[in-house]
Image (cartoon, rainbow, N blue to C red; front, top):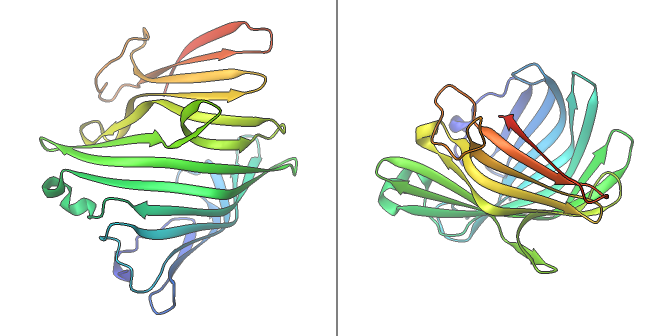
Length: 241
């Protein structure tokens, strides 16, 4: 709620309105991102009702995407996002006080995310994620999980229809772990993506030989990607990230 805490985004303008109900932060994107590899246009509005304090358990803020278009300059491919995500401070508390609280839980949910691809096909996605922040001996750890279940599959974080018109689920089958002492890089976890025609998974936090490893310092982590196509053949690759 304090406008002086807003930091500048290199390809956007930011307008803060603390008098309206809900209070809003409106971010209007207008050009090339900070890395220079993508352009971003459109608007993202962050809003919270008057009288709500984020520190309180159950406090919610909404993040609304209005024709937010991201274009990759290397091949001019783009996606356009519309819809609203709701962020909830499930446990209450502020991250600045995490050392005293030991843990804080946030959730992210959406039932109306719309993604338009550059061939003008439009698809709807749902989101159900949880972020658990913990403090352990001076180290901050973020654990990300999926909270939706359907058709016997649990841990689903996103689901809906892909660009080819096929339904999909993306489940976090092993929690995604980010640690402060490794610059909050993704250090372990597994994601599984499934459609009626193929399955794919990515196992994170590996060395070049495909074995689990600690923080690699300035070197890359590796992930093991596996996928099974319509013919039933399974393929694997170990890639840096």
